[in-house]
Length: 133
Image (tube, rainbow, N blue to C red; front, side, top):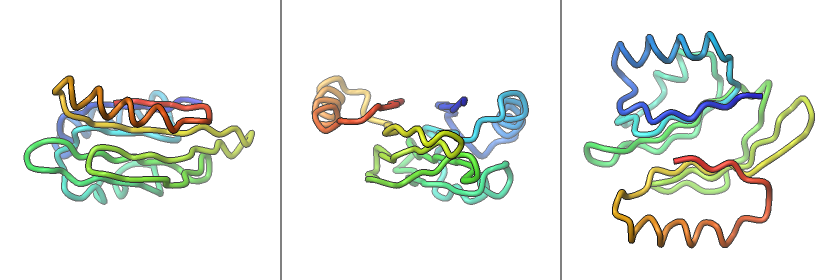
């Protein structure tokens, strides 16, 4: 099963929409995480693309914004935690009951802040994990 993670650097333009549609048509992922969407509200993405659930983090200033979109007929997500920089969720694949922890992160590009963040994150992981950011 394929999941797609994309630092799209803006999720509301016509180029993004055309390219995103093409990627979805080709790979048919049940779950997509978009980073740096620069969007306050991601409902339009849920309405326009073949997903029926989402977890979102709105834009802060002129950067960031995270959304995880999925088809709940194929995968289930249980939200664990959301902050302005991350989404933690547990993913369960419906067809075989496999699960993993999913961490979607958009952290500061300053090394010392990223190092501190990752140090805290990895201490608590005790399940198979898919991390991106």
